[in-house]
Length: 204
Image 1 (cartoon, helix red, strand yellow):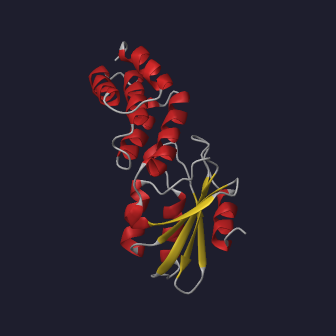
Image 2 (cartoon, helix red, strand yellow):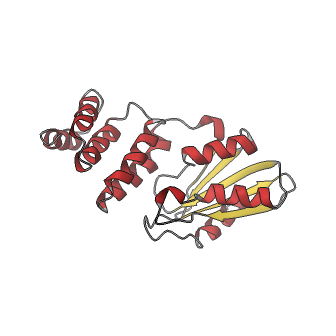
């Protein structure tokens, strides 16, 4: 059975405004009284002004007088469940402390975590995938920020450094690309990633 808070996050996702990334996210924040404050991501042509679903829900709750919170659900259409980004974690930590996170996708997969326990490739994978999606849209400069954020969760993930290096190549930063390729070469890679690294390293 789907948690009611997760259902609220899935419903909020339908209102997302994401014409640039096409990455739609919904969030539902439960306050201490049981009220639910929903939010969706809202993008802007000036990418830095984009607001994530978690922050929209948080600011909405604060503006409505809520000050104590129990848990938050986050919904996205990704195979790997999508956790809050760094900016959202900072906002959640400041206003909620070590709140419970409920992550859910459209296929019904769900997991629960505490805000303080977000580490490892599980949390880096959605960010790395988002970075690759941005690269596919020739937005390497935006992808770089996603790869940098993913490294906070999984600094020793070889594929992350491989794709980060590729983005740097396309962004015209060969010296930094070589550094990422060198880092990737020191870490575990699949056979396919090793072949890709050999191809890309000649361009770095």
